[in-house]
Image 1 (cartoon, rainbow, N blue to C red):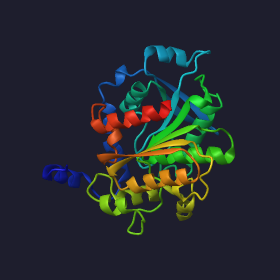
Image 2: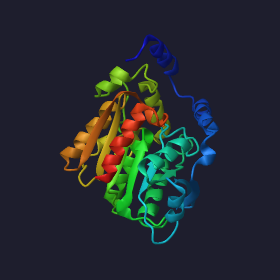
Image 3: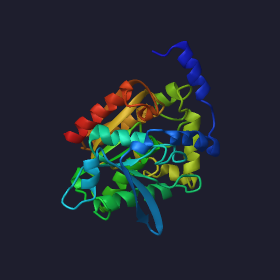
Length: 310
């Protein structure tokens, strides 16, 4: 239940258009995390053409860190793409999120530092993510991995990238992800009054992420207007969803992106894929970055672990 005080705070935080540098400075405050020195992590990189894509590895334990880079040990991996509207955030800002994810799932988390818009517009960031996935799935990376033990995941814009990477892998045939986890993913190409989704109209103002911000993010991400009709830009536009990985989609009740995520899950099922969709009651967009004691986060990890173990 949202109190009057909470409503006033939400309204104050749900400001209008995106100012890129100010938004990045605000996001960068997460780097001041005093716990980050205790995370078990290792920095690496892969090539996308001549560009080196940074990847940060998080380990659930000291033992897993040792085994993860030794021959003969194949540990499960979550390949993760962070959110931030394709414009803000970084592996640095997601340190706590990814460290917690590794500990909660017992898996190595590989977090990808893809290039951001508007300096690098679609499809640059997507291709950075694809290069990281290809290297991991084809064992051209320092981890000794079993492709069947890798899951692709992402939140918000990262959920968009995860869905697009899996679709591109199916289309190109370079590798075949078995599982994907999409956390309140951004999958559509329109957040104006013309959107077909009720959640855009009901939750597009006053709940932190606004419809106006989403339109700004899309404009900053696209190279041209025609990108908005590309299924790799907006995966929900795909005509063919056959042969996609088993999918877990988590949506937030008070999120403008809620309905498109749930619709995508239904379309995956209709195309013959296995898909689970779970709506987290009373949750806002971005809740996954909150503390591990937060009930919405605990509920999310319960769904994730059951899905990963099935």
